[in-house]
Length: 245
Image 1 (cartoon, rainbow, N blue to C red):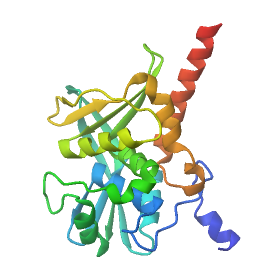
Image 2 (cartoon, one colour; image 1 turned 90 degrees about the vertical axis):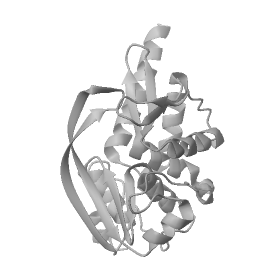
Image 3 (tube, one colour; image 1 turned 180 degrees about the vertical axis):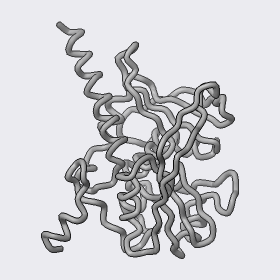
Image 4 (tube, rainbow, N blue to C red; image 1 turned 45 degrees about the vertical axis):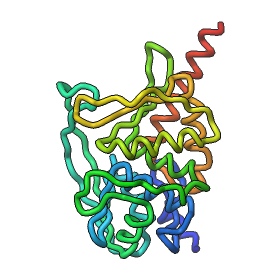
């Protein structure tokens, strides 16, 4: 790759390169694990078309890069959503939908048990991606997870929210198998009609650090989400140091 080409694929904010598109979107690679984690968490498959919803332009650029030279569109949307834990609260935000046309969409739906053509639930057979669980969980967190700093408890709050209970069961299975201790609470119904569960507060920093370890080199991350996670962890560490004085 030439020097100018490397510059063209740099992340505008972090300096990290954009991820390389895998030769085979269904092969067990870190790139495929991250991509299909994002699709499962906040995407859809319809025929040969796969769509992924992301929170900002930088994240859209990174997801689009994984599809390589395939026919890819990025469409900006302004959405208003009810807050999952309190439907009286709504939030308006800019989002992007990355859409790609590829025969791998149908094959991925069958291979990984993703819902297709409007199905409400899937089987989520993601065990083929177990060797890249970190990237898979990172895609799932960025797609249907929330990360925040909880000032009252000086903790990192990590929770998962989704309409499909089966997907959240899959997330819990992968948390159980992760090399970091990530206990979580019971599954609850959200006021918006879906389901959610939260990771234990004291496990948040270690889980967040593990999730993004090595991401700078691979480029497999949403910059805004990574910054928020890292800053939340930093605030916890700063609070712990202050409490020891």
